[in-house]
Every structure is written in structure tokens, then in C-alpha cells.
Length: 406
Image (tube, rainbow, N blue to C red):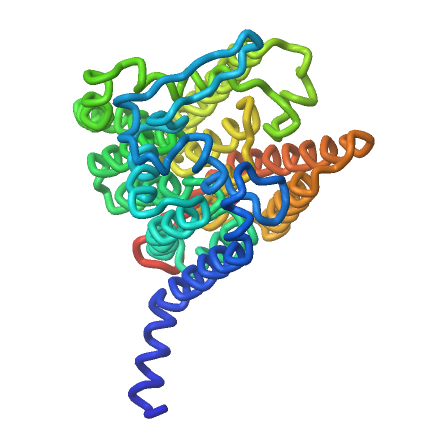
């Protein structure tokens, strides 16, 4: 290779090109490993094994091959036992994810083809997430890219959309564009709800600095969410609300992978809904209260720490902890200089739990699944403690990054 070519390659790799290529390779591996399953994917509901994917698994039950525009004609029925059944034109996700699903299903007619088209459309969100992390955290972005979770979960569900939008908002915040950050978080909320957790510390930070600016930020976020949801609310309010009703009817089970199944499985679904909602709300109030006290004590607002705490607490206390939710938390390992042991422990706990869950252990070995769930919960609690203890903010080796150092 000529000297000029070698220098250009070195510059590309040093400037983040290597990370983006790595992310592309991991995403490609995640997609390619599903190719042998394409025939299986078209045989209806999939068993919990290597070929499982929420994306393909919902193609037939949601009648996505009919290409019905979502929510407008949506309907849901509830059986006498409380089980919810959705008809065609209804999807159990917020409006932007529903539109994404509808668009990716338009050119295809089988579950296998839907898996491929969805993977192709989701891949740019994975690249965007990696790029944002590179701009924010430099080489630490590898803590997100080089994980089994990215390859395993990238095309399991549609969570890459929310991850990319959340990281876009954090990047805009780091560049002191809070208005656009609020818009990004609001758009993310209309795709996967959880990026809305980052709006709380954003508004709180600017409420402490400039209350008028805080009202503007909150107003922009609200207007963005209203703009995206209003057309569906006006045309068919019941169809728009069905995803939330569907989730509220979802019972805790061994498949929800949360602490609630093992701690309080004797409770009714409404009781678990109330208890988990109250638990999440209390944790968020405590996190915001701590952030205000920290600001008054140090003069620095711990936005990233509160964001990390909020997401971790939600995962720990909500009634459902789907495997791909770990993609929400992994970017914070890059944004904060956590101990490698904590990162490794989280990755191992996630991989072990998902592998054992996929194997579908017999009832006699369900206790081991409980052990793995509690192992992950302890790791998330360790992550939260590290976020609180390490509230010192400093600049990383990347000029535009703002990290914290537990």
C-alpha cells in the first residue's frame, strides 16, 4: 500500500472510522447469524432457541403482511382470563416504532423477509449510536460496540431506535444545544418511551440555571410529542391508546425476566402495575432530589449521572425487563469511566441470563434462572452506586466529550 494510502487508513481508524467499521461488523454478524433461520422464521411463532427474534415473531400475529396502516384501524380484544389479543393494524409500541414496523413490512410478505428488511433499516440507527458515543466518549465507545448484546439484541427488537435517539440527545446536550436535545429525547419517547427519562434531568438542570429556558425546553419536548401523536389521537384515540392498554394487561411471568416475578408473583397484574409505577416514580424523585443537592453543593449539575441512575432504576423496578433493554444501559459504561470489572460483570450476567432463558430450562431448574436474574439486579445496583459515588465531571481525551468518573 502506498505511503499516502497507509496514512489515510491510519487517519480514518484514529478518527473514529475504526469504531464505526467495528460497529458495522458487529451489526453484520448479528444479522448474518440469523440467515440460517430464514426458513424457520416463516413457520409461525418461533420457539425460544437460536432463531428467536421479536421482529419476525410478530409478523403473523400482528398480520403485518396485510400492510394495514397502524393505529388508525387498530383494535384489541380481551379474553375472560385477561389475555389481550390485537387485530391487524395494531402494534404494542409507541407511534414511531409502529410506523417504522409498518414501513419495513411494506415491501415483504414473509416473516423471514421482514426480519431482513427490518435489520437493514435498523442498522443505520446502530451506526448513529456508535458515532454519537465516539463523539462523546472517544475510544470508550468500544465498551458499547464490543459486546455480545449489540450483536444479539440489535435485530431482536426495535430498541436501537430509542438508543440512537437518546444518544443523539445526549450529544446535543454536550454541545450546549438543550432545545434540540429535548426534541431528540421527545422523539425517542415516541419510539420507545424510555428516552423520556432523560428529559427529567435536562429540564431540572436548566431550571436551576435559567427557569425561562427550562420552560422552553419542556415546551419543545411536549410540543414534539404532541405533534407526533396528535394525528393518531384525533383519528382513532382508542387505537392510539391500545399499546398502553396492552402493556398494562401484560402479566408478570418467567418470561418478563424482572424481579417482580420472583418477589411478588402472587400479586395481581393491576397490583404489580401500581407497585412498579410507584417504585419507579419514587426512584426518579430521589435521583432528581440528589442532583439538585449535588448542584448546590458543587455548582455542577450531574446530568449524565442522573440519566444513568434513572435508566438503571427503571430497569431494576419495572415489571418487565426484556433482554434487549440492556442496550439502554450499555452506552453509559462508555459515557462514565466505570470500572472494567463492573462492565464485565454486567456483560456476563446479561449473556448468561439470556442464554439460559433461550434454552428454556425445565421447571426443576427455574431456581437457576432466579439466581441469574438476581445476579443481574445486583450488578445494576452496583452500577447505580458507582454513578452516585463518582459524581466528578471531567473532560475525556475527545474534545467534545463530557464524562464522569466513578
